[in-house]
Amino acid sequence: MTEPLLHPAWACLAGALLGAVAPAPLRRLIAVAAPAVAAVLVWTLPPGARSQVGIYGQELTWLRADALATTFALVFALIGALAGLYGFLGSRRLHVAGLAATAAGLGIVLAGDWLSLYLWWETLAVASFVLILDGGSGRAGAAGLRYLLLHVAGGTVLLGGIVWHLAAGGDRLVGPLAASGAGALILLAFAVNAAIPPLHAWLTDAYPESSPAGSVFLSAFATKAAVYALARVFAGTDLLVPFGVAMALYGVVFAVLENDIRRLLAYHIVSQVGYMVTGVGLGTPMAINGAAAHAFAHILYKGLLFMGAGAVVHATGRRRLTELGGLGRAMPLTLALYMIGAFSISGAPLLNGFVSKSLVVAAAEAEHRELVALLLHLASVGTFLHTGLKLPYFTFAGPDRGLRPRPVPRTMLAAMGLAAALCALTGLLPGLLYGLLPFPVTWSPYTAAHVLESLQLLTGTGIAFLLLRHALGGEPTVTLDTDRLYRAAAAAVARRLAPAVARGAMALEALAGALVGAPLEAAGRPISTPVGLSVLVAVVALGLALIVLVPGV
Amino acid sequence: MSRAVPALVAFGALLVLVESVAGVIVVVPGVFAAGGFLGCVAIVAVSKALGKWWLQRGESDD
Image 1: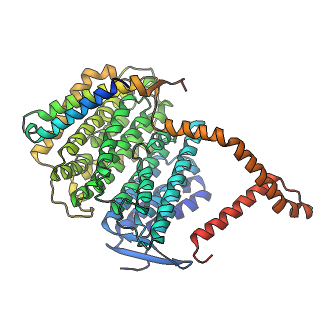
Image 2 (image 1 turned 45 degrees about the vertical axis):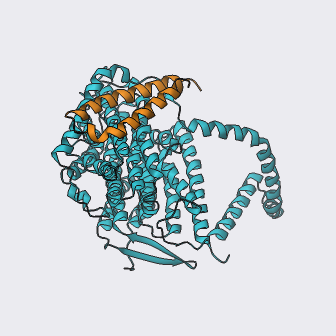
Image 3 (image 1 turned 90 degrees about the horizontal axis):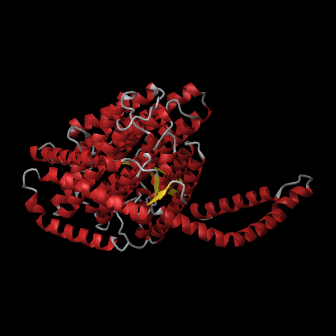
């Protein structure tokens, strides 16, 4: 069906534009209401709806609403509203960038054609960059710049793959591709956003540096939009299975060493996205359902976990396990709500992680991939060890550091309460979640064997933690990750190229001065060469953009 | 690094062994509790070893 439809992303984009100029009270309401409206719009989209628009001779399918797309779109809109409520008292920058990121996430998953997907993809990179800057520190600025550089590079690879694909006569609609030629480039770009090691370090570098609410927004969109794109384009690509399993284990291994509470949670994003990538690689209807269901559940419980950790950072101004402890008495509600997220991510029965993670594992078992299922179980053990035991123990129990936390705003607690309620609701009534998925679900998570299996895993892990907890406290160290390699290489290349770049810049400045500055100076208006250079660069960039994007130019 | 190679080989051999008997061991009562316990110990041991030999640096180090 092709008909004019109101794109849910427009609600958030309009909110971002209004929020940029509205007074603070109105802006705060918009930050919550616009994604809520988007959620209603997603919910009311007719199944199979499509909407197209022609721009400069290009036909864009800017909205395609099938079950896979709307599953992701609904949870993107929900977390946008929850994060808006959590960051209700935040800055204008947070609200505008959060709404723009929500719009971009919705745009990516609802995009029908490659060009629409690319435009939203880059919008998300820029909005996420601004969200990282909301951390307000020098570290946030540096991490944000690294994030932007890597994602612009990834976006450029994506654009290259799309142009190659279209030039070779490929379908303009986003659909299945082989992982070779243009498909390989597109897969590489998706892998960057999905944080598949060794391309993952931007995530653990940047997410902990944002503001508490900024981290909640960030935890939701980039990796899960990439999971959606992988599921749409590369479902059944077996190469993704070992990478997914490696992700699931990589995150838990690094989380053991981590001292920063939000970086610890960031490593568990890598781990949990590993389950989704594994599901996409398996490619069966059950596995794709599992990937989509786990993305839905993950966005809610991971958002809740980042909200809990953010509340601690907000209340104490501290972020390292070695500086925290004994907060349980002062922050009991934060602890209780955090633990709902922690049990959810650990796959405890009655919560949403149990009904989603088990779909992926069961899909692996159904394909007789016992080793894959076993390693995913092992990753689940590590998940409970860190997010359910280590982090809460050393933050809320553990040695009392004499901290006097300031009160957590009610809007933060309300957002955590709603996120926890959604985790419980979709865990208690899995049919609500399964009913959204792209394929019919015939599998039931609540069998006696499966419940006992999960409880046993959690119990065994708990006993081991009790025995090993003295070895698991944070250490005042930093952990080297793969970004160490490219950051060192980039610095070396920059040192080598700096003289040549400087000479080139001086030559460009001279040229710009001749082209732009001289006529203005002749007209009696002196102009500095840096401004001239900026104008020249802007004109060249605009020209290139026109050549690339507009046919016939 | 010299100790990491045999450790990885041993881990690989263990995976092959587990893969071959996975269908048998899951029917043993309490095996998942034991698996949770041993998995936890293994994750901590491997992570701590990697951290000590390779990955961890002091916060003031470059």
